[in-house]
Image (cartoon, rainbow, N blue to C red; front, side, top):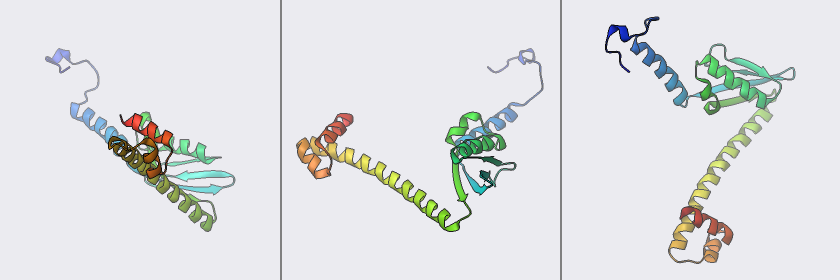
Length: 164
C-alpha cells in the first residue's frame, strides 16, 4: 500500500524505499545468482578445516566432511549476508588437501568422473524415453523397441506410460 497522506506513514526510523529495495535486491541477487563459493579444505589434527577465501571470516571446522559441509553453508550464509533459505541451494566448489597430493588428485579425478557419469546418465534417460515413445508411436511392438534400445519390455511400457 502506498501512503496517500503524511499521517499514513507509520512512525519510526526514516528509510527510503530505494534503500529497502537496494537491500532486498542485494540479498535476492546473492541468493539467486548461482554464485559458486570456492572452499579450501585441509586436514589437521583429526579435523577438517575449511576456508572460503572470497568471504571475510569464512572459516570453520568439523570432525567429518558431511558435518563440515553444513558448517560451511552456515558460514557462507552469515558472511555473505544471505537469507537462511539460500543455504541448501548454495553452490560450493570444494578443493580438498589431505596432505597427499597424489591422493588429492585421484579423489578430484574420481569426483569429476562421477559428475560426468551422472550427466551422461541423465542425458541417456531422457533420450531413451523420447526414443521409446517415438518408436511405439510408429507402431513397433514393445518387445521390438526393448531390443532396439537395449532395455526391458517392462521399462519400455513404463516410459511410454509416463510419456502419454
